[in-house]
Length: 251
Image (cartoon, rainbow, N blue to C red; front, top):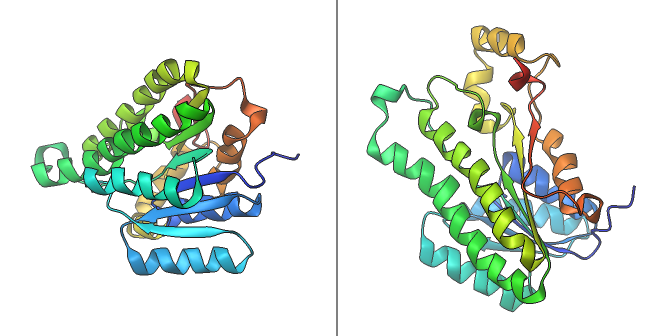
């Protein structure tokens, strides 16, 4: 299937590792032009260089999405350097696994500032650009934990639940401007930041009882759904939360 994404300008946040890196490579394979954002300069340069070596036009932008001045200035720089984005993929997030009674204000603020506040205001800046052209796609990374309760992830679940609801409200308000807004919501995904959990045999055994498909996700499992939702094949889909959760939430 030709997704029709050739030469589209795609912003990916949190692009220096894990799901963000997989998404960058997936959009690059479709012939997109990329603006990659992350707050880790060395890791971002590594991913950008690797994608660029594959023949993709890519620029990297060091940005901490918790800092609103950086968010807005980076959105402006991308538009100046590359033009109006066709697709924004809000992937950047942070979390700690901490019991509710022990969550600190610092952990709570970092979780919501990274995954919700930064997403909100980057989306606002980019949507204003898209609205002038009356077309665009905004894609958020949600989570199965924004739907199903999970001990130790209260702040993260609250943040992702907020992302899911924001997806619907943005779709409602931005639809008349020609902008579609959706979210892809994966279950636990095998990345470097989850290695400590997936090395625990008791945790692994429990997770597999929650996943009818029999395994947790790999970063590449998120790529296909994201590409589809970004493409014109999904032209009538907006305000949707696409669960990529191996069946976790059917319990």
